Image (cartoon, rainbow, N blue to C red; front, side, top):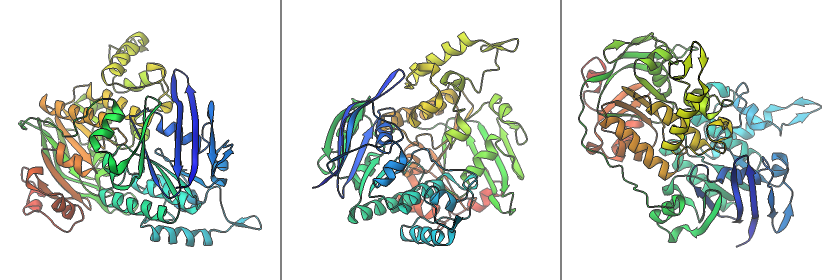
Amino acid sequence: METVIEMRGITKVFPGIVANDNITLDLRRGEIHALLGENGAGKSTLMSILFGLYGPDQGTILKNGKVVDIRGPNDATRLGIGMVHQHFKLVHNFTVIENIVLGVETTRRGFLRMEEARARVVELSERYGLAIDPDAYISGITVGMQQRVEILKMLYRENEILIFDEPTAVLTPQEIDELMAIMKGLTKEGKSILFITHKLAEIKRVADRCTVLRKGRHIGTVDVAATDLEKLSEMMVGRKVNLVVEKPQAKPGKIVLDVKGLTVRKKTSGRAVVDNVTFKVHDGEIVCIAGIDGNGQSELVYALTGLRHADEGSISLDGKDISKVSVRNRSKEGMAHIPEDRHRHGLILDFNLAFNLVLQSYYKPLFQRSGFLRYGQIYKYSNELIERFDIRSGQGARTIARSMSGGNQQKAIIAREIDRNPRLLVAVQPTRGLDVGAIEYVHKQLVSERVAGAGVLLVSLELDEVMNVSDRILVIYEGQIVADVKPEDVTLQELGLYMSGSKRSVGTQARSEGEDI
């Protein structure tokens, strides 16, 4: 099979860390080549070099057997190389269509001509099942929709070598199925795909070969069809990984979170995106909110955590009404929050790791005295968390958060929130973008919080996670709770019917009107 891309002896060094250490990789025409590795293994760095975002310190890149010099994304685009980034490269105050055509605009006599671009974008979105609103602003659409825009940007440019960096991290199971089909269809058209993912099942579904990186080094390249999941996971993390969530029988106790008649309306239209929602979370249990992205999960979490106030209803934490309480005071009352969007709501990217780890507690006596920060205590505490939660960063606690891998940014947030010993942990997509070893660790942490007597409200789009981690599942559809089931009493197929609105469990409406669940 013809080789279209070769990366030979690629080395890239950042302050304090060798991100890529003499890595060699080849991509064949018409194949899906998976790139697998732990968080911080160097996968995104390697692909960023291929796309021109970084220059290699050593090594060469060949396209169709000829050495090429890729000094920036424009060079990569001219060579037919496109990339869907893990952290979206979108302009938030631009519309969807403006983002898609940015840099390759159609003009006539110096004026933008968007009619042709609009027609082509609509055609691409329909052809590949990536429904979007061309005139919506990026700032007003969900994370899943932003991912669709990134994919359409690449398809619009007709790239022949496609880099997907964690493309399914924010997609629903149905959207993942569609994307897998799209990827296979693209290779049939002669395109070649480099596919970064932490999800071993996805690699088995679509990849032809898989290259494994660990701590910046090439561990091996294998034929996916001839390699099982256990072997892939062991190559990735260097040890055997338990792919099954182990947890003792749940022992729910007191009501920690009591939500009654919660309604959140869109500010523009007044439409209820969270519609008269009522539920309870007890200490000692993990309750999961499951649903297709865009059915009110984000708005529900914003209302619970104080990022916005609900229009109607009440929220009680340990019997205290916190409906109008600030984010900080909810935190003081015992609520912890692992947010969906780690960049917007989880971290201050230009702060270092130490300061991010004390964002929820810097004002406490341990970290300040008479209004002055106690830097020694902050760095001592941060170093302890970095060690305990295995947060990998080139310069330790002094590493700027923006420079860290997405998975290690996520681990930093999890460490900060869990270490506060919360009464209620609201965890939204906590394993998004994490490798199997880190996912195993996070699941253990969630179970440990439950065993320690906290209530855990998990919001997840991953059906495997929903079924394996939760003690009780609440399915949300169009802003309403349409099912309250236990994982052992429901199949994946039934769960899919609830999520699509095709089925409602008997008595759900009665519970939404106030009955204790």
